[in-house]
Amino acid sequence: STGPTAPAADPSSAAPSPGAPDTPEYAPVTGEGLVATGVDDTETIERAIREGLTLGEGAFVYKGSGIDVNAPVLRGLGAGRTFITIDSDCLIDSNQQWSSLFIEGISFTGGRAVIRNRYRGANVTTIHVVRNCRFVSYKENAICHASSDMPYWKITQNYFSAADSTNSIAVALSGLTDGSTVSDNAFVNNRVHIKLDHGGNNTHIQNNDFVQSAPGTNRIAVWIVPGDQKANAGSGLLIDANKFGNEFADASDLRIAYLDQNGDDFSRAMPSGSVSGGYISGHTITGCNFAGNDNGYEGAVVSATPNITDCYIGPITISGASPNCVLAFRQPPSGDIRTKIGPVQGVEGIVFCNAGDIITRIG
Image (cartoon, rainbow, N blue to C red):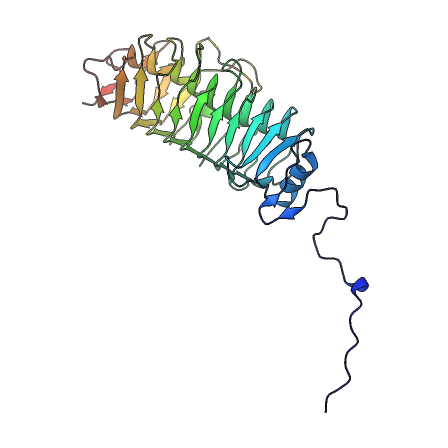
């Protein structure tokens, strides 16, 4: 025989599903991600970043005051399917230590900055990833931070084009950046494409395309602020297999530059025209194509500091018009710089260094 039948459950007494929003103020979640209204999607975007949800196909609009969470996560369905227009100062604007960052698959338009962290203390936590995104029409920065020590950035397969090339720095990584990689990106319109601190500190810059899409002056592809002491002045930095294009290049534009900055706001400070007393050490620049046009240019690498040691430039390729030299010092180098240059392909008879035989010539 069978036992007594259990009474049917009362649907009204069922426990709420965990994680469900308390109010219906957010856009619904579908199999393709959160849905855009195209008018004001601030709440939807903020929820996505807090909870790690995916934004679906469509045009989202952000009008908030900047999102500040400990571990921002924002995913889209791809830069050709998920779009965010930033109708405000910043999208992510933090002033705290991040435990992590993960951003992928979104096209961002506008804003003064898109991803910004103003926290100045050490931020040695885990990996910070920005990949497969498109950043356009930002006024100052696509990605920037102010930390004294923030390693493990992985910035890859993105497209960067600012509103203009007057005051914009696409990627500005302050402080120590050990173990960071900037790779496989297209930088097409910025005053500065990449800016690094403390001599570059073991960052790898690989397989990027650096060009300009309109006329301009005094622009820089890769700007490295020299370290203020000999230790930790860039040992291990690698600039490899990049193209430094000649599109809309001006004679005042620089490809790789070692220059001080004017001011102490790293993400906004522009290059100083003064000579530098800082230090650069242990850089490897290899496999790159430096393209010139009829305007000419100062050098493949230009240094305002005389304090360069133990660097290697080569093999590299020079295409189109040649620079005045490969390594151009703006003040005489100090002592034995123990730096090697060559082979240099694509041109014959180029001056390797404007300071004479102080370098070791290879090839």
